[in-house]
Length: 106
Length: 143
Length: 110
Image 1 (spheres, chains in turn purple, green, cyan):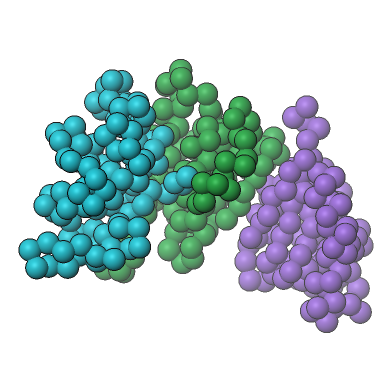
Image 2 (image 1 turned 60 degrees about the vertical axis):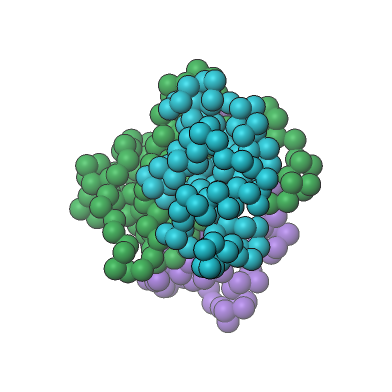
């Protein structure tokens, strides 16, 4: 059973301000989903310094980013990293329901 | 807490595996203290718990904290309660819960610390071991 | 709220817990106990003193379960049970005894 458990990790801090994303990527188990929310969404922008960190791990994790937080920050027209899926609030709830547990990286 | 509200929840016989992830240094924000209170409350319900110190969270349990001159309450002695809970859970056959106090090795070493620097006894885990442990929990609470 | 003792005022919160722990003394404890309809005996003092020592060491007032367990360890099973403690402090051992001991209200108090 233990091996089949899968977690959702959320990251809500900018990768330029905190090591939150870095710690999440270090301690989340392969097969987990990672949802970038609030200031965490900055890590999803292609061509940014943080993008490499995310792009390098798309085989290990399913990445999601919260659309409303992208739009709120004026990033709607920006290119996102390949393999990062945009979700709305309903999608957020569906992810929480789909996974066994949630860890919020704050 | 309001007793009338609390009694609406029947927690009798419900036992889950909790992990408390502590990632913040002790005095710069209220997170560490609030998380500590949360851990202590979970003991009252005899829940299994892993108390994990990661990143700056390892600074919470560094020994020798003296907050007098800074004018703040020193809550580091209170981690002794967690250690005592763990010892009681280990030794007392009447207490049906398992507690672990763990520190991530990388976080500790990056900060130039060793297990000797902590005021309580901890298990030092590699990142992969900690990742497995986290993934096995029913509930993960983070601060 | 406050307590009056020998012309001095000791401030407390709305539930009667004194606000400045450092001002506590045994006479004040007796006065708080009277307010709680408790007549202090050696058995009461044993628990109150235990709580003060516990607070001194851990900087926190124990919840009832922790108190019971810790008293059982230190004073034996005939005293480390909630029946005995509720006899001494009918309105909640952790709450009432902490108040008399001059400590803050225990965390996780239900």
